[in-house]
Structure formats: structure tokens, C-alpha cells
Length: 327
Image (cartoon, rainbow, N blue to C red; front, top):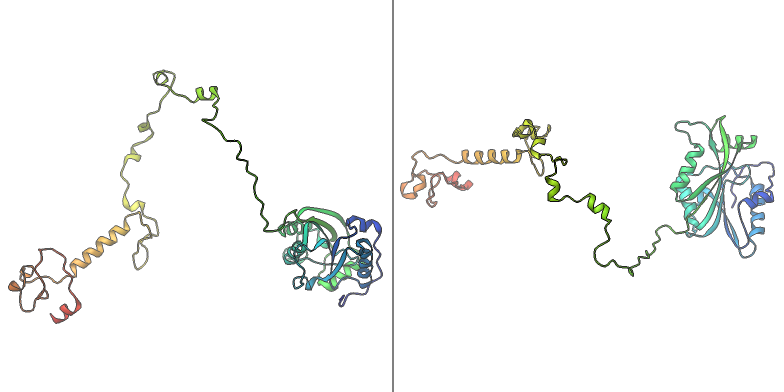
């Protein structure tokens, strides 16, 4: 269950440290460990937790790399401890933080310990304390507090180099706690909207306010009241008819193929429609004799309108491809 962990000197949890976690009998506690966690320190922590929770409680130990694949149901634990094993140098990803928030019960607490940078380093795998607090907030926790900040021990510095492959002289170890809100993610609650009191008639109006905003006919004749003529707000430039070309967008109709925008308001759509109509009219066969519209009795033998009814001069007549081919 404990996997391959570094061999380090024994560590002992004091009663005061355990009291800081607020663990009591009957609670369900999850302990998250990783490869940097010393075996003896982990066993010592689990034994003390089991003594505090008693027979009615439960202490579950989970490797951080297996937490996302674990079968823990949501809202399973009252307290989650991660990285608090002395000698651990655990880093918590956003997915791990979200999973720990998921398995916490509403009102439950998370206690974690993590090495952080005191200086802002670009593309660093180790975050600053402020970024860690922001990550906890984004995971859904509230009341984020930094409990302790201390220098890394020589053993922890060595663990950072061995297990994280990270070298820095500006690292500190911070212990932070966060609380899950007193409601589950996705929960809903009915609003208590009282409908007993209903207003009858018009709402009361302050007489002073009503008098302030009331304008009577007598006030219109008062010389102290200055009225602005709306026409005076317009100058000569405002009255000029704008050039349609100026209303067109800079990129409107650009390209090899002119195309109007959807819901065109600059007039390009109408312009293209007129050009299309002119092209259709110009594409119609022209009459050499000028009598094609009168009917077959006045048409030549090679007339493309042969066999079609008479039509009015200038009327648009569509000829099929077969008629033009036969002609």
C-alpha cells in the first residue's frame, strides 16, 4: 500500500499538531501520501489518527497518483490530510485539489503542506503561496488560510531534488487549510418568497419628490425655465445626406468576387441585384427584325422565340437551353 518511499529518520507527530487538525472520534479521515513520504512517519501518523477517530471513525490511506482512480464517493470524508507527513514534499495539481474537494463532506476541512517558491520563477513546477491559495479557491474551497510557513529541512531539500528534480535556494514549506462550503456542488434550494403581503393600489409617492419632477403649463411660461430647441442641436453637417460609399465597411465587397454581407445595410446588396438584372437582360437574344414579340406569324424561321406565345415589348422571357440549341 505504501509503495517505494524514501528512507529517512523517524518523525513523531505531537499532540498539539494533531489537535490543529481538529480530528475527533467518529470522523472519517483521508491521508494522501506520495513517494517522498517516509514510511515510518506515515505509519506513525495513521496510528495516531486511528486512536483519535476510534472504532466509529475511519482512516483511509491513498497514494496521490491513485486518487483520481479511487472509488471514493463524493462527500466521504470529514477531513483530508495531504503532504502533512513530516519529510513529504508533495505537489498538488489542479485535478488533485478538485478531487480532494469532491470527496470532502460539506463543511469538511482540507489540510495540506507543499513546498513553495518565495520568488516568481517563470515556467516553474513549484508555485508561490499565493498561486497555491488561488488554486484551492478554484477547486471550490472557501476560507483559505495559511497556517504555517517555515524553511525546508535539509532532508526536505534533498527530497525536492530527488523526487521533484527541482533545485532552488528560495523554497519554503507552507501549511494551508481550506473548507468545503456547507452545500454540495450542483445542489439547489427553494427560495422562500413570501406572497402574503401584496401592495394594493398605487405605491406611496413622496410629495416633495413629485413636486420636484412635475412640470406644469405655467412653468412653461416662466422666464426662468430655459427650454432647448432640438433643431439647434443639429448643425449643417448633420443635415447633409451621407454618401452611400462612406457608409460601406472598408472590407465590404473586397476580393475577386464581390459579395454583400449578410443583412447588408450599405446598399451593396441592392447594387449587386441591379447588376444581376442588367446582366440577365443583356444576355437575352436580340431581335433582328423587331417582330418577335408579336407571335409566330411574324417570326423568322430561325427565331429563338418560335413556338412561344406573344409577349409585350421589353418583357423578360426566359429561354430554355433546348430552344437556344435548336435555334
